[in-house]
Length: 486
Ligand SMILES: Cc1cc2nc3c(=O)[nH]c(=O)nc-3n(C[C@H](O)[C@H](O)[C@H](O)COP(=O)(O)OP(=O)(O)OC[C@H]3O[C@@H](n4cnc5c(N)ncnc54)[C@H](O)[C@@H]3O)c2cc1C
Image 1 (cartoon, rainbow, N blue to C red):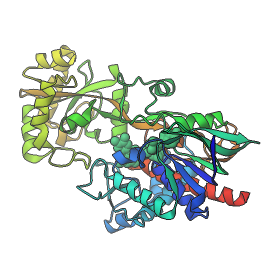
Image 2 (cartoon, rainbow, N blue to C red):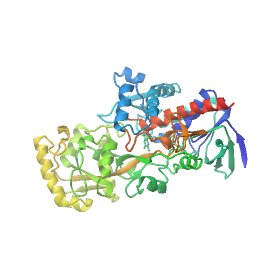
Image 3 (cartoon, protein in one colour):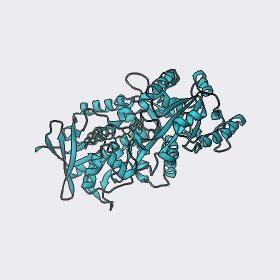
Image 4 (tube, helix red, strand yellow):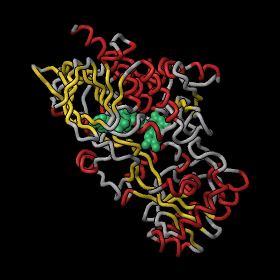
C-alpha cells in the first residue's frame, strides 16, 4: 500500500472540507502537511448547486439597514428547536457567521444579503457569480475561490480519491485509508483527520433505514451519486456516537429542473389540496419550505396538488407572480407556456391542464366530490376576501373558476441529509458517552444535527452556513490538537 505522512487529512472538498483545510493552515499547520481527499472530479460538493450561506450582523446587512441581531437569531433558533440542539455549537456558529462572510470576501467572494421568503430573516448571503445573475449554482463561484485559496496556500487536493476508512491505534486516529480512480490503495498517516463527506442523500438504503423515506416513491431529493454516507460509516466504525438523522426537507415537482417554470409558477399561494380534495395548509406560507413540506409529509402518499385557473395565470402574466424568489427570477412567466406544452407532450404525470373539474380529478386522482366541496367554500371565501379555514393572507385569495385549470403535484423532496456523527461544540467527534476520539473531527452535513427534526428555514442559508462555519471550527480545533501533540 502506498503510504504518505501528513499532519492533517481532510476528507472531502465540499464547503466544509475546504473551509477546514484553509482554517487548519491559517491556525498554524504547515500547508504542506495538509491534504484534501475528494471523491469526485471537482471540488465544491453540493454547494456548487446552491446560492449562498447564512451571515448574521454582517457589513452588508448593516449597509442595507437590515438583518437580525445574534441574540435574536440565537433565541429564534433555540426556541424553534425547543433547545433540542447543542446550544454552545449553535451560539458559536451564529457568532462566527459574519466573520466567515468577511473571510470569504477576503478570497474575492461578493455577497448580497436577502430573505428567502417574506417572513424569513435576511440572513441568506447569496453569492454574486462570476457570470450571469445570482441564481441557482451561484455558490459555485464561492467554492472556486476557496479552492484557489487552498491552492495558493499550497494545500494539496487529490481529486478522484476517496477515503475508505480510518486507522485507529491506541484509541487515537493515526491515518486515513483511501482508494483512487487508478485503483491504488493508499494510506495517509496523520495526526488528525477531519470528516466532511456531505451525508447520505445518495445512499437510498441508508435513507430508508434512518429516515424512513423511499427514494423516487415518497421523496425526490437532489443529489449526485457521491453522498453515500462514507464519512458517517467510517466514523461509526471508529467508535463515534450516532445522532438523530433527518432529511433537509423541501417540496417540489419531481424532475423540476426540466420543468423549471412549472415548478415556480405553480408553487404560488393558490388552492392547494390533498388527494381527498381537502385544503390542509395556509398556502400563504408556501415560502417556508420546511413548514410546507412538513404539512405535505402528513398527507396521503406524501403529496398534494396546487391548482390555478386561467384568470390567475393571466394575472401573473400581467403583474408577475405573488411570491417572487431569487431562485426562479422575475421573468419566469415568459417560458411557462412553452414548458406547459412540453410537459403535456411528454405525458409528464406531475402536471395537468384540464377543461373541467371532472377532467382535472380524473387526471390527478383527486376525489371529485371532495374538491367540489372545497371549491365551493374556497371560492365563496375568495369573494368575501377572508379565508374562513386557515386565515390565509387576503392578497392570495383568488378564486379558481375559469377553465382551463392547471394543477401541479408537489412532493416531498430534500436538499440533502442531516446528521449522523456525534460531535461536541469543538467539532471533536465523540463517542455515545461523550468522550472525544483523539485526532478525529467532523464538519458540515455529516455532523449537522442542530436543527432537531426540521430545518431552520427562517434563518436562510443555514446548511451552507453551518458547513462553512463548522468547517472553520473543525480546522481550528485540529490545528490546536496537532500543535499540542508536537
Ligand atoms: C440544489 C441545492 C441548492 C442549495 N442551496 C443552498 C443555499 O443556497 N444555501 C444553503 O445554506 N444551503 C444550500 N444547499 C445545501 C448546501 O449546499 C449543503 O448544506 C452544503 O453543501 C453541505 O456542505 P458539506 O461540505 O457538508 O457537504 P457537500 O457540499 O455535500 O460536500 C461533500 C463532499 O464530500 C465528497 N465525498 C463524499 N464521500 C467522500 C469520500 N469517501 N472521500 C472523499 N470525498 C468524499 C463529495 O464528493 C463532496 O464533494 C443547497 C443544496 C442543494 C442540493
